[in-house]
Length: 185
Image (cartoon, rainbow, N blue to C red; front, side, top):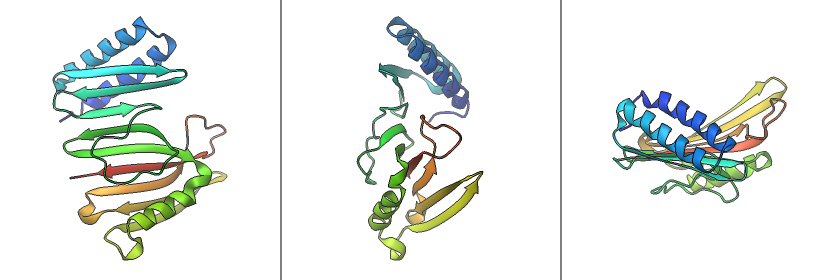
């Protein structure tokens, strides 16, 4: 299981990702090796890091010897074992698995917010199902953030649909709808 000190190492991963985005080729390999050493020195055992680029998109994939993984960046893949459905047309920004649980964060066009809420309301069985729904709306400056959260039986899984920022955000306004899923055992 990844240790709390891994948070610092993940910060280093982000820095390595930025370095890789500026370089390419051998700089990717240096960033991968540096990140592996940082994670391994934090006590997580053997770690495999893969940094890949596709145009402006950079993805960092980290896997431990225990099979736990995390993927960060545009173009990350859905985690293996995810049973909660995901609507088409989104960009996976982060995903991973740890201790039998999986998670994923996906951005969509902001105008799809209502569609995404309806999709998960239908999938969870509506208000009479086993999933608990909580919705909030909050004014943030001149903008409004909506959030709908479903919590599964025994709170082992959660689905959150909210207004958020994509990496193209400007002027501090919400410009995307995010779906965050955590699925436990």
